[in-house]
Length: 452
Image (cartoon, rainbow, N blue to C red):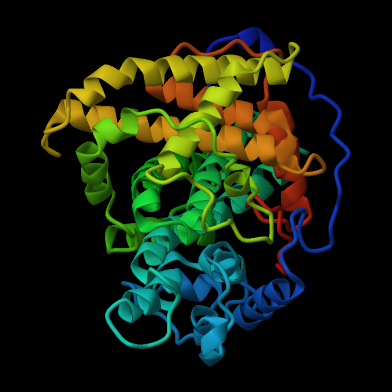
């Protein structure tokens, strides 16, 4: 068994061999660390039970059968799934975008093409018909694509984690992959944080949420592509041939993306960000308490009048970054987070003048595209900081480790000097990830228990 390439350590290599810190005591809920309303959890469990055992070769919704499906067509959906997209006033179950996603999560993590066929396609059709549908179905559909991509990628990540966790008990060389998979987990949590903030924002005026939706549609596929490369490498080095179920599942995920499983189009999202560069450069009002946007496990809806008139969600994220940068905590992980936030705030200030000067830039202009890319990455960092700050202290989201690892990876992508860290955050993040694999817990921000 070949296990030859260690995870990259970047700077501060003296922390790479640090002993993992003791695991934090956290609440262990039966269904999730951040449980949804009971009826939402029950419908999610029912859907997962309808999908059946993913490893069963005789199950038409199992991974062996789905990995053999070509194109975006698959088996038919349960008839009662349509009720999830109808508002309660029309006899359905829909109450909010983030709760809809929690019901559909078992579908999204099972198969990307199936998630499109059963999830985004009904919303795209409803946008041009008189059928009852959630408000702004096209914008919701645009966010469900990244949601499905994150969830499907998380399934392959869990597979890789179980393999490495099992192998390293008898083959110490497998431990070199702990850092790689921990970094991928941090990227998934970062992307889902940004996406969930966008989902919670859909009760706000459309003009306040448009750029956040575009940032999600652009940045999530970029980071998930990096994660896919890591997962392919881990599977290859772990001895799994291209014809194995594990490799076929990853290949199916990539094929679904290549055949239209990526909604919305990242290039179109980048073009919208380029057109809005001057607005992206503006600071927020600094006076709105928008913490509700970042409380992603909160079952209460975001107030529709949360933001001052003329303020966009991207301005709120800019304020979250500024708040984190202004903090002066004691040393340790919190101090490292504040230093990372200050470096990213400096990056945002550096981008301000070029963005203001790019008011009439073409979406094809490489310089303008680079500016938009960096602005989207900074928004992702701000979402991480806002979600971590608003998290329930008993949950993994309140841990500084995942947020610090996500920001370290972001600063490396941006070429911003990496902040010094007191200890390698990958150790604790891997410990959480491995424990989830052993307990059949999803790689999502809610730490949701799965049936399989």
